[in-house]
Image 1 (spheres, helix red, strand yellow):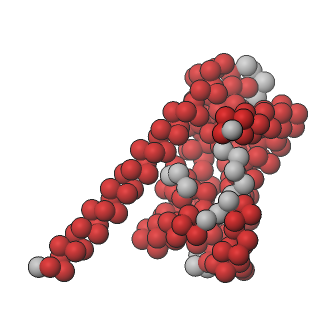
Image 2 (cartoon, one colour):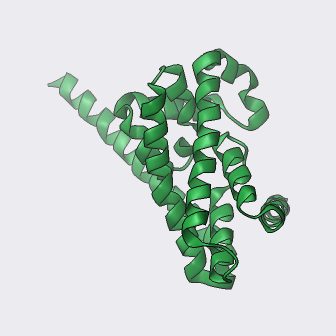
Image 3 (spheres, rainbow, N blue to C red):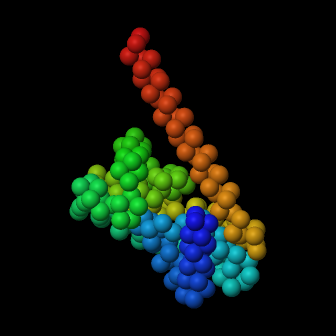
Length: 205
């Protein structure tokens, strides 16, 4: 079942990019950043594969991917800005946003502030939902846009270049990126656990 869904998503991505070219990358990355479950770990490596074939330009792929990421993030930002958490809690389930996802993103944003927008672009779950708490917190739009673009650029480059290096085996990268996501999740949980332990230990002194 999961494999079939993954295959359908991959097919949709490949057909969209093959048909529309660069605008297809923008559309797909916009959807991903607006919390539609279309993984950039497929979009950008496949685009990198097309660079490998000589059909696309590396830097054009990176730039349009980053622009799409920015557009989708801005959409999420304004939903949070004008709708607030109640709107997301009411309708988030329709785009696969759980309350737990939003809580995690909000904790990350509150702890690290504006800089979290930059670093979150390589973090699983958080990179998808961080724009909502930024909007809810009324973070200055220009600052949000700057950090989003700056954080999305190296991520887009990394994924695209990985697609170039692997060539025809680009599709196998998704497995390794998922393992990388789990590593990041483990590190985050470990960090939070250590922080809680230090707080409890301090109170007991």
